[in-house]
Length: 80
Image (tube, rainbow, N blue to C red):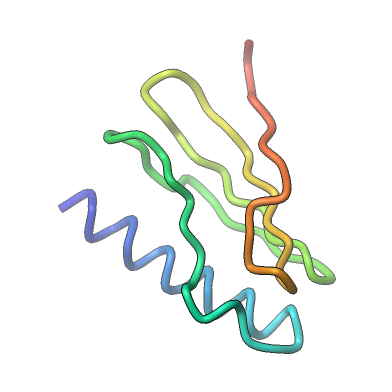
């Protein structure tokens, strides 16, 4: 069930990235590659950048996604 929630949220993120980025994302899509047990807690977008708040078993992260390239540009660890 958790996997379906993550996959559905990623679908929304990809659609949002396409709309904000002004063009399509790379054809292979966006792979966040997070460990098992991770979940998306929030998504925000502004001017070609999408941020994704991820709750992981080892702590929370914010992933900064470059919408034009369709890849994770950086990762910010929270609460360490």
